[in-house]
Image: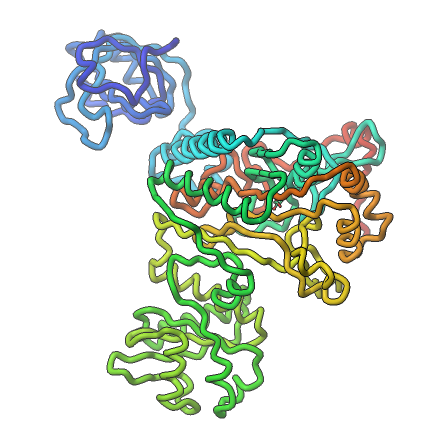
Length: 585
Ligand code: ASP
């Protein structure tokens, strides 16, 4: 070993011991007759002192030539520091250097490697290995490892078997585009990278594996929304002979365990909400329930009062913003501008101030009496001092817009507290979703999801009304997992494919293997997948998954460090039978 201990270990207990440390020079302070170095490794920082009187001259001179991020090995004695640093575990001691070996030099790093850095995001991604040297980034990765281990231990203790499934597969429709890999040995044919191991885990259940899990990379070629990665990690699970309730309980206890183990937070039974309820109350299928501001539908109270703008709308819906009655005209206008931005796309906002004296002041005073407004306040749960904001329009669109406003206001008001955890289950998702563009139904979860057994006959007559045995696990306004009870018989699966617009031939070419498997005694089964990146970020009190991924891609799906994707040479293209043609204009 090049060291006897590491840079986070030494305290007054080791006083007088001779030690050898190895690490990076974080910074040095040179007073001529005395020089200090902060030596850093994964475990911490230890101060090294070089002193004219006590350190050999040659060592002193060598130390004076060290630059930031040089890699060195130092041997010396643990001594008590004169001015102690209470913020460092090693802050009471320093190492009086006797010898020093330069293990490697370093160019001046492009940004400072300190907790607070001057490096911009892109630069830090390009030099990610340097960013990883910074404590906050390193701690996030260590934290991730701790969470993964806790998950593995929990699932193993509950009889789940870790099985690896292939990465070179045939495309599985989970709603996104596949990344494809050309096959050199099979001219003109392609593998797809899994959007998830969905069909494989189901086949493992047919294979009698009973309980499966895998912490696994999944790949989706989606247009990248903020904070999405083209490759991400799922905790993928499947169980045999279970009903929805069994899965909810199993994974509720996993999250409870993690919160307790990692955050020391104990949370009782998770609330459950149907999809319909979540949409009506929060305009969102992944509601943040850490704060109120629940939606109040005001159709009955606001229509036919002479305000024709409202009369024609499908939905009039409001929220009560706590303590915001004192907002100035300017503040309200800012909110109105915010909802009118193309990203939200609302027409505007109607506002009602609930004054402390019990009176109301609104932007629609001309049309509504004080009694009318009092009813709005009652319906939306507004108290004196609150501000009611109302939107109107098509049901779905308006809910989505108001939901965005609710989240924005919560952010502004500091109601999204990172160290508060509010998980819930959203259940009874619709099985299908109508897509205007393609004029077809899409599977809301995926095509292997089972309809509610009691609604199976509706599949023919009113497919849009059928709910699924599908559920999402939501934490603090983020979907952290989703799953379903699966179809396990070939006939229902065939019906499902037909509903989704697959011809029998298409279904057979794409999913023949699954339908075939279903004919050999497929057991009832179901499962779930949790997004590890997001879960770790949330448990870490943050929302950006990039900060918890060792080598993330940027918003355009590029790895700036290795510069990927990148062109390949003609020989490689030829070998793969690929020919790039310029796009015709
Ligand atoms: N394969 C699904 C997904 O990735 C999860 C599941 O149904 O288990 O969302």
